[in-house]
Length: 147
Image (tube, rainbow, N blue to C red):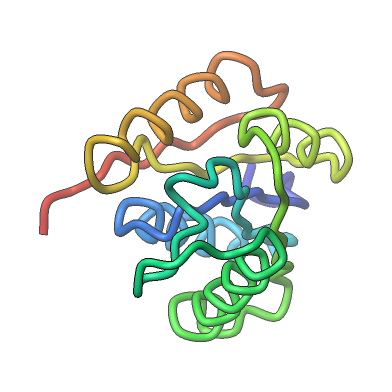
């Protein structure tokens, strides 16, 4: 069964919950020698475009920051998995993720039920729910565990 996965999508919001999901995605990818698509969708300027010091980032700066975070995730959390491809998109997360599923013929989606905090729970939780309902491929859902 695992050898049928050629392309696995693992979206992240950089929360602990999404990092847990990435580890499952990595295990599936390694077991099936699949392409692992790891990425982030920038969608809400009021929550994602603020620099930790408090000033607002442009979309270009936010995209570059997300790309840097993804490269760090690949190197530190995914052990530099050779078949890992990173992406950053701007737009509505569900629409962008479904577009990637179609464009890249994704065989499996691995996603966390929600990120950290109430706002991320509302956003990531609703995205995960939409993906579960509408994805044309299997979806592996990882529940956040308390550590």
